[in-house]
Image 1 (cartoon, rainbow, N blue to C red):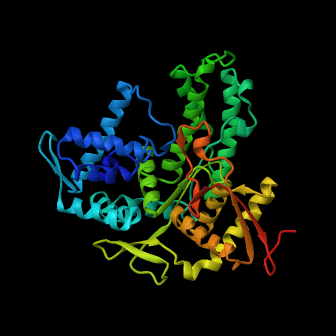
Image 2 (cartoon, rainbow, N blue to C red):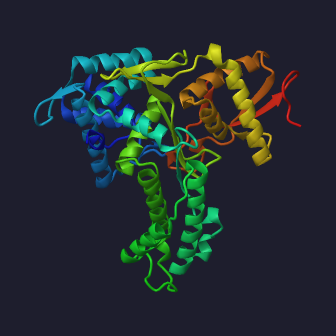
Image 3 (tube, rainbow, N blue to C red):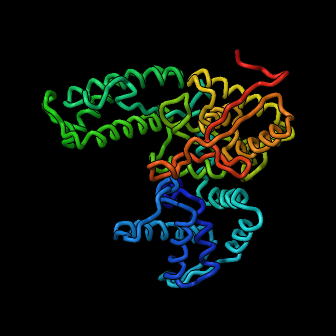
Amino acid sequence: MAIQSVKKFYFLDYLHILLDSISQYDKRIDVLTSFLVLKRRYSLGESKYKKLTVDTEDITDGRIRRYIYTFNQVISEALEYKLVKATNNLDSIHLTELGEKLLSKYKERGSVSFNEELFRFMEDKYGAFRYLVSKLYAANRTLPGLLFLPSYSPRQLGFERESIKTTNDFIGYSEALVEKLGNDIEKYVGQRRDLTNENQKLVMRLIKTDLLPSDYKKCFDPKKYNVITKRFRDFWMSYFLQKVYHYDFSMNSFDLWTYRGKQIGIIHATEFNPYFCGKIVYPLSVIMKSVESRDFDELYRYDDGYSFFIHKPRWSENQEQFVAAIWEAYVDLRRTYRSYFVNLMALREIVCLSTKISEKTFEDFMNRTYKLNLSGKLQIRISLEVDKLPEETGAMYLKREPVMIDNKYRNIIAIDATKGGRAEK
């Protein structure tokens, strides 16, 4: 099916920098050179995370092969959408009229309009977003639209790494994990399932691949610890996706489409919601013949009369709801962490879920709220600070975007109620 044949890259920015490069050069080698320069400028990685570290001068052959693979994948998809045209051997590449119009849209209206236009090309070709959003709404009747893929490390279940040395130790963790997963299925999906047989199959598979010793009392190679825990994580995430939620395709295709949808603003996907251990995915869009709410804009119309609507609330009509949402989220986080300043990205996750808005809408609304705060027009008082920016850490990849407010990155927030507000006692 077409949904499986999507090219293997996450960032829609790659299509922008390809078109930008081709607008300046037509020889493939020159386009590639420009593409790599822009890739570095925009901090784009090969995974779904932006890079924080600067590539070293000594680039390995393996890294070059990955870069060229990504480049070829992006060209291939651009050819499918007829954004570019090329000679048979790809020595020469040019923009089509469609490609020129799309690049002009980026320059005139920015990445949001560019990504929404790409949505139309992708939906024409694959129809994947209709399938995915429909699956999200059908997957969960207990929490409509929310798909939860749990992930619990041994430590989160009370097993310290130093205490896990033998196959028996990992079996103890797996049994605790299965109990927790069974409770999650009942809590979040409203089903009861016995996962014992699946767990036994997974353990036997780990033994057959020599990751765990067949003698349960024997110690495993400690260097394999991370690989083993990842196998547990990947197995159960795939189980939930395919057996519990009945998604018909691979985890790889699911990740690609959900992350692309997140960039467009039609789906939210995160592994950092403070109320869930694992990944949650939920739609910021609906597929209907018509909507009455002014908070939805039509992105795409299908041949059967249905349309794809994106949730785009207007500030003028949602100001009070948003301010109330950030206050409630702040109070919840402060109770949990017992700190005056709380993590702004965690607050963003809670607010995005409760109001079903994208991260871009959150940032826009947060900026508007902060301006009202500075002018003294709110019943709450907001303080924003920087704890430590991502580039000041030892991380290689930016896994959570900080929030840009008043032209500065912020990552911690405190809120007080003023007169007429609802102060926490």
